[in-house]
Each structure stands twice: as C-alpha cells, then as structure tokens.
Length: 253
Length: 156
Length: 63
Image 1 (cartoon, rainbow over the protein chains, first blue to last red):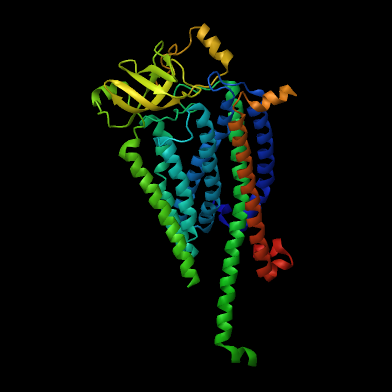
Image 2 (cartoon, rainbow over the protein chains, first blue to last red):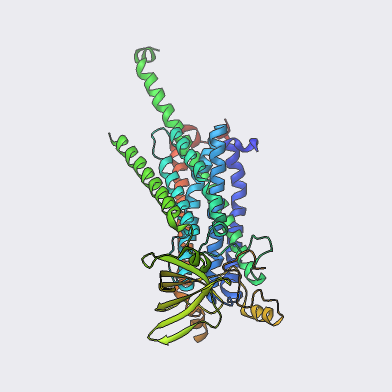
C-alpha cells in the first residue's frame, strides 16, 4: 500500500483503474435500471413505489460508506501526516454529501405516498440530516484557513468526532421507535426482500460504488494537481524574495 | 482584509452548521428519539388532554369503522393493550387492518383524538403473487397481526 | 400507446417515482461534470506553472 502513497505512482495506478470504473458504472447503471424500472414486479403493499427503494437504499448505503472512508482518511492524515490521505478526504466529502442529499430526497418522495408525510423528525431521518450537515461542515472548515494544513487538521477532527453518528444512523431503527422501517437486507434471519427485488437493489448498489471510484479518482487527480500548483507558487514567491535580497550580486555575475 | 473576511465567513458557516447539527441532536433527545408510544406506554403514562403525542401500533383487525362525515374510528393495538382512535381526514395508502400506523394527537377520556395518521411500513418486500403463495402455504408470519411493525426482530 | 401511458403512470405514483430517478441522474451527472472541470482546471494550471511539463510531461514528472 505504501508503494502507491507517492502521488505520481498513485496517478499512474488511477489511470489504469479509471477506464474500468467508468465501464463498470455504465454496465451496472444500464442493467440496474432495466431491472429496477422494467423487469421487476410491484410490491404487494407499496405497489410501484417500491422502485424508489432501488435508488434510495443504495444512496443511503453510499452516504454511510463515504463517511466511513472520509473518517478513515482523516484518521490516516492526522496520524501519519500523509498528504494523499488529506486529499482523499477532500475528494470524498462532496461525493458523500451528494449521496446523502439523494437518500434524503428520494426517501421523502417515497414517504409522501407511503407514510403520508414528506418528513418526520424520527431518529433515523434526523440522524441522516445531521450526516448531511457534517459533510457540509467538513467541507466549509477544510477551506476556512489560509494555511491548507490547518484546514485539513481542523476538518479532520470534525470528521472523526462526527463518525459517532454513523453507528447511530445504522442502529437508530433498532434502538428507538421510528417511523422508518428497520433493516431488510442485513439482518440475522436473512434478507426480508424477495430475490426479484434484490437483483435491482444490488445492481444499483454496485453502480453507485463504481461511480464513486470513478469520480473519486477524477477528484483525486484534481486535488493532487492543485496541491502541486500551491507548492510551485510558494517556491516562486520564495525565489522572488531571494532574488530581491541579492539583486546587485546576481546582476554583476 | 479580504482574506480575513473570507476566513471569517467560512468559520461562521462551519459554526452555524455545527450549531444546527447540535440543536437538532438536542431537539431529538428532548422528546423525539421516542417517535411514538405504544398503547401499553400510554396506559402507564396517562398523559393529560393538553399533551400532544404520537401513538403507534397495529390497526386492530375488524376495528375500523367509518360513521360518515370523513370520520374514521379504529383501534391501535400492541397485542397487550389497545386504544381507540378517532380521526377526521384522509388516511395514507398503506393504512389497512393489521398494518402498522402512527397517529398524532391528544388522549381525551380514554379516546385518542388524532389530527394526523401516518402509515408505518414493515421491512418485508415481495411481489403480490409471493405474498399470496405464502399466505396459502400458511408461511405468513403473523396473519396480518404482526408483520414486524412494533415487535421488530421477532417478525421471523 | 395506452400501454406506455400506463407504464409512465406507475399505478398512480409516477409523480413520485420519476422525479426521484430524475433527481438522482441530475445530481450524479452534475457532480461528475463538476469533478471533471475541477480536475481539468487544476491540471492546466499546473502545466502552465511548471516549465518542465511543457516539454515532456510524463518523464519529467518522475524527477
């Protein structure tokens, strides 16, 4: 793993992975949509509205997955001070924020016809809204300082403190009475979803995961180049100051 | 000056968001972590008529009555206790006997007067034919009594 | 015709289902385009600043 911690080596690896991530995203999206919208049956209670689940649940999984990835890279950045870890956090947060927003809005669009309300302040919905604010807070804090190092450090601490929210989200439906239903796929007695509905669910989940890898690599490339630009600018300023301090000597030579 | 200004706005936004998150947590802890009470909770708690709360459970089979005028009367049960609910308005699609439901309103003289009724969905997803087949084969968990709404985990 | 209409109706809940799918597409597409632009801009800035990259980018990067 340490081998790819060098930015140039990382970019070369990313070059090789990216076309695979792109084609896997396309393949999973197309097959996922086919099963989600055309070839899967309606639910015995929800009717066609069950189709919203095929994007809502994978988006919610990605919201939690991205935050876990963010917390891991922030911990790595704080402990090992590796520059790539901070950049990975910066690159992950906007993707996680987008998935969290999608989970919230698609859930709302499911809730109106099924529960009879767009929104309730139950433990599950509230904790996911807090997750969204944590992503936004991380991004704002990361950019809040002139010295990017300080921004990385402050936002990494926020992200790590906020990680407590992830198990709260996962178990909120078991710990408290919520309007939101408990977990269906990951439970002791096996999934409570019929196989014809599990296929589109897993295909869309794989599509979102491949999309995450694809966009993450694009953003990492941007972050690495932006970091190099900062370093070059700093060196130019430094060189200019050195030249100014010894102008006569350099002209005479 | 400009840099300082920008930094200040960013820190301000971060603090604002943090504050909002903290406030939401506190508000949730206050009284909303328990989104609803069961009929048993209600009979133990005996809340006054001025206290707004939510009552959740299953719609008792055979208890739904529509006396007209858009009024619907039914019983919410947790199989141990049941409470009569009166509601005027339109109930959501998933409202039916044996289904999970959450009503919001006040308890007055033993009758729960709801001004909002929400349907609670369970964690089971299947096509209608499969549901039919399960019922026929006697594999149905709970015969419309406990599809895993209130006693989750015990569903299977 | 009526078959396709019925399909888009989605049993009366098309008004919730289609916006959900449309929004997911719009947000994920938007994030993808924004990420591409960000990476492209950062790459061009770096190439413009670094005199070495103007000639043979890949090889000199190694040093």
